[in-house]
Structures are given as C-alpha cells and as structure tokens.
Length: 425
Ligand code: NAD
Image 1 (cartoon, rainbow, N blue to C red):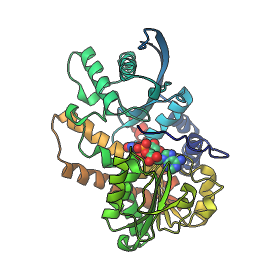
Image 2 (image 1 turned 90 degrees about the horizontal axis):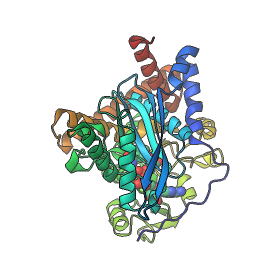
Image 3 (image 1 turned 60 degrees about the vertical axis):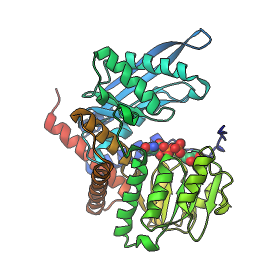
Image 4 (image 1 turned 60 degrees about the horizontal axis):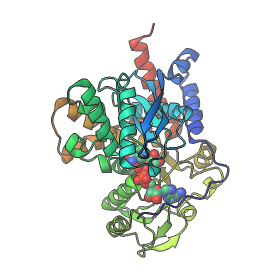
C-alpha cells in the first residue's frame, strides 16, 4: 500500500491563482488593451453549479456540489480538466478556467478555457461511489459538455477511468458513441498514444530551446528536477536522454543528489517498484527539497506543486534557467528577485502545455476516426512546443520583458484580436 505523507505547510503561502491574475493584469497593461477588452477577457462566459445526490455504499444519499466554468470560447470549444478534491470551490475553478484559456492560446491550439470540479474526497470513496458521482455529474452537464462545445479532461483526483465513465454516460444520452467529448481516456476508448509522457516531453523541448538561446550545450549542462511524478519523471528521463546530466531529483520523500548524474532509468524502475515513491533510493545522496531548489545547476525544473519558489528562497536560486513543469510553482512576489538575477524562466503556461497539446491531438484523432502513431504525435507536439517557445521568446525581445510576461502578452493578444474579428453584440 502506498502511504501518503502530508507535506509540511509552506510558510506565508501565496495564492497561485492570484499570482496568475497579477501577471495577467501586468501583461494587459503592457499590451495597452482597452478597459472594455480587459473586462471581456476577465469575465467567464458561463458558470454552472449543480447539486449531485449520490447513493453511497451504505445506502444513504449524499449530495455533492459540482462546478463547471467556461471562461472563454473565443478561440474555439472550451477545454479543461475535472478536479475531485475537498478544496474545490467556484473561485478556484473560475481561476483555473482562465488559466486554461491562456495556456491554449500560448501554444496556438483552437480551444478556449474551462475547468470543472466536485468538492469530494476520492481517497475515501469506493470505485462504485466515484463512478456514480461521475455519471451524475456528466448527466448534470449534458448541455454544457460536447465535442464542439466544451471538452473535459482529467485533473487532480481524476484519471482515465473517470473519463471513460464520462464518455460512456454522455454517449448513452446521445444514443451514439461520442469519443471526442472528453480527452485523457484509456487508449482502447480512443485515448492518444504519447499523452502520458506529453507534459514532461514538452518541458524538455522548452528546456532545450531555452538552452539554445543561452548557448548552453545540453551535453555539458546539468539539471535538477523537483517532483518525480507524471511530469517530473518524464522530463528527467528525456533531459537525460538528450545528454543533460540530471544531478538531482525529488519527491514528497525528499531530494536525491549525485554530482555525477543520477541514473534516471534506475530511479524510475525503483520508484515504480516502490509504490510510486523514491523513498529509500540509494543511487544518490539524500538532500531536502529546499536544498534541491538552490543547487548550482544550469536548469531547474519545478514539477511537483505550486508555490515552491517564493520571495523567501528566490535569492538562493543558482540555476541559470527555471522551466516550470508544475502549475504556478513560482509566486508573483519572487518574480522581481528572479529577474534581477538574470534567470530565464520558461513559464508554466508555455512549458507544461505539452499535455493539453496531445489532448488536442486525441480530440482530433477521435473526430477523424483515425489513430496516429507515436512518431507522428511526438513530431507534431514538439513542433507546436518549439514554435510557441520561439513566438514567446520573440515577444519578450520585442517588448523587452521576461518570458512570463511575454507568454501572457502572446495569449491575451491572440484572444483579444480574435474577439475583435468575431465581434460581439
Ligand atoms: P503527480 O502526482 O504525478 O506527481 C507529483 C510529484 O511531486 C510526486 O512525485 C510527488 O511525490 C511530488 N511532490 C508532491 N509534493 C511535493 C513536495 N512538497 N515536494 C517535493 N515533491 C513533491 O503529478 P503531476 O501530474 O506530475 O503534476 C505535477 C504538477 O504539474 C502539478 O502542478 C500539475 O498541476 C502540473 N501539470 C501536470 C500536467 C500533466 O499532464 N500531468 C500538465 C500540466 C501541469
């Protein structure tokens, strides 16, 4: 059995969503968008709150609250995950939906942004209870979801299993199989090859592109990766494959450092045989997660959770670049310190967009009724990530701003100019 260790609370925790909005505000100001446009972009298009009565295994009915917020449909149908977590509330869902709008716009995929969630604790629920809840939520959202309207995906607390139930329930209601209503499905139900590694792969493409700009030879470069889950593990493996010496990795059990480079293949095998944890890994010296962040490496990849680089530890960062695998790992209050040290940051909405890009490919394959092979998927997602990086980099040069603000400028400009062409009432 995997044991869950609650992470120590971070002092003076900042709200990553407020951090995101403060950067949005700054970019909107730099871009000089009108007050009108600012409000058009900020206000979500649709916010749905539903009560979901579900029969629990003990026979009693429990009512859950479910949400779906469509922030924008200006670029296309809205896209965004469904989160099952006790902390889910409408404000969080609203902010996460906006985050999806900017992320899709940065990588230039034809989607707006959305997010959904249910306040529940899936760890304390049986598979049957989760299934009934997912099916009830899908039925409640029949008029919201749709392959041309709003396409959900997994997020915290949900995965391919839940997406399969959603697809099945939606399809039953429509009287036909509609695989394109949701992404992140199991492969046999129309999921895409390459989705599992996609986010880590995109992080690697971003890191290599940034190294090129900084004239760093990957074969002489070093990296530290925080988090050894879906994003961090594949980012570490692919960086290693491209010649980068990954000197440190970490997870909730702590950090692992080897100046000669960690054998990532061996670490992955250890983790997979050890309930998904690095705890007890002996191929490296044990350090703390805090120490990992301040190592003198070229590339730092925070790929665990939000708010790990703050104004308290930003001054200690020695890396030449930070490539944000996680969402919101750097708080807004750390931005100035990081900038003044000349560290290049490849921001989350760009660096971790490889996942939503391959989700988009899943939807495209579902719609054309054809499966692409892994080679085609990787080639196309690498191209999208590289083009997006170059676009953001050129924007950062043009406006003389850092990569984060440049990414928001690219996104806001794209959505605002598309709105102008489409027009309103
Ligand atoms: P995951 O649950 O697979 O892995 C998280 C990893 O971080 C685990 O190894 C865990 O032990 C570790 N971790 C947790 N708390 C930690 C702490 N306090 N210190 C050090 N390590 C800690 O999650 P994931 O899917 O890899 O997601 C990681 C981050 O990337 C999240 O911020 C997520 O929102 C973001 N993200 C994920 C995807 C995706 O496709 N999976 C896409 C975009 C963004």
